[in-house]
Amino acid sequence: MKIIKHYLNGQDHDGGDRTSDIFNPATGEVISKVQLGDKKVVNEAIDISLKALESWSKTTPAKRASIMFNYKKLIEDNANTIAELVSKEHGKTIEDAKGSLQRGLEVVEYACGIPNLLKGEFSSQVGTGIDTFSMKQPLGICVGITPFNFPVMIPLWMFPLATACGNAFILKPSERDPSSTLKLVELYEQAGAPKGLVNVVNGDKEVVDALIENKNISSISFVGSSKVASYIYEKSATYNKRVQALGSAKNHMVIMPDADVEQASDALIGAAFGSAGERCMAISVAVAVGNVADDLIKSITPKINQIKVGPYNDKLSEMGPIVSKQALDRIKSLISSGVDDGADLLVDGRDIKLQGYENGYFIGPCLFDNVKTNMSIYKEEIFGPVLSIVRADNYDQALKLVKENPYGNGCSIFTRDGDTARDFSNEANIGMIGVNIPIPVPVAYYSFGGWKNSIFGGHNAYGMEAIRFYTKVKTVTSKWPQGIRQGAEFKMPTLG
Ligand code: NAD
Image (cartoon, rainbow, N blue to C red; front, top):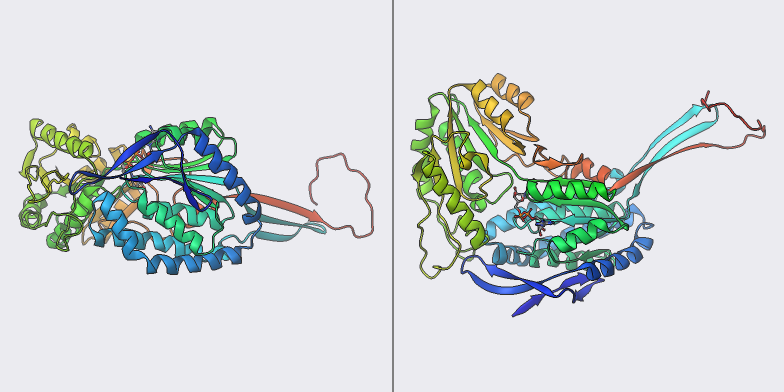
């Protein structure tokens, strides 16, 4: 059985007494084990990172950019291998894995422009003979803790930009699917990043706690569930770390009576059931306004019934299995609670059987109608292929639902009316909004982040937000002697 180790200083590294099983979710088989690190491995990683940081923080941004250009090419050349590693351990289809890699690659492309992104400000003559300039300097060692559902895209939101800013980086990937993440780090070194600049420590809470508690760590970037995000946020604050912690979601799509129903139902199919609903930007609630619900159901039900569920290596598969048995059981129990609570289960994917994959963690797409806000299927993030239709009498009721939901990652509106769309964009208290776009994940030169319980901390991921997060601002006020010595001054300087 393959044992996946940590990756420190450019090589595999043993550490920790515990391991965790990694499964092929399509078959339920254990395919490898990953070592779970401890405080000792964390300390080793930090010593290596400190050493790498000494010279890396002094490299020119142009040199870092040239490595990033090589990295972009290497990722493109290895896209099939990386996607296969994602799919094998996560279960999502190869095409979906490739799509997520492409979205991560966009951030690498953005990091290629790092000399421009790190430019400071300059003001001449802020006082007589006095100039002021500011510069962005690296923080030190930055840490990334990432979730299972995007094992390449989310690490690529983090370490390319952090290191382009001059930092060293320690990555703690999800213990469920670390292989593709490890491959990304190997490729970064092949592209020219020095060994030890990005180190990977595998593990769970023990590693995360040891990283946050260590005085040599400057920042924590976390993406995962809100429960853990809020824990990371509080603990990081206790240890005086800069922290960004992105959490869970319950994304609504509002379908207005004037929307193109076919277009809306096509959009919903991909947004609710793509990647088996295991996306933080998946749409899990369709808010059908006025009389649109019946038409929507008529349009979407046959499309749902045609979704091909299967293992990632079946070219026809459109939706793979759930990541783990535990997650599958939780999804099924939430579906049962929805039925018990009185919602109408119009499409029930629970009993799907795939020949040859009887032990896989498969579930077919599910559709609920008449879901109410007090039901668990509405209140909880299901993180599976379950779409709930909530009926609203009018736009105001639909907007109220969006506003009162405790999560605020993404949402969208389907309408032909510009006034309604504009009002929704302004009024919804949500971080990422789509107008006739179901999954409004921003491009790399904007930034990604929700509002409310979907984020803890003040910075979004990637874009200029990440450059600000991964750097400290230093402001220098300078004056050169002009031959006249003025002697000491004891009053508050006013730069007149
Ligand atoms: P998770 O919170 O269980 O795990 C995320 C990371 O935290 C993993 O690396 C894990 O090892 C670590 N971890 C788990 N429990 C911990 C603990 N008690 N203390 C310290 N560290 C701990 O999340 P997951 O199941 O891997 O991912 C799914 C969740 O992530 C969903 O809620 C989804 O909405 C969310 N997510 C959010 C975004 C976003 O951008 N907002 C993106 C992707 C996923």
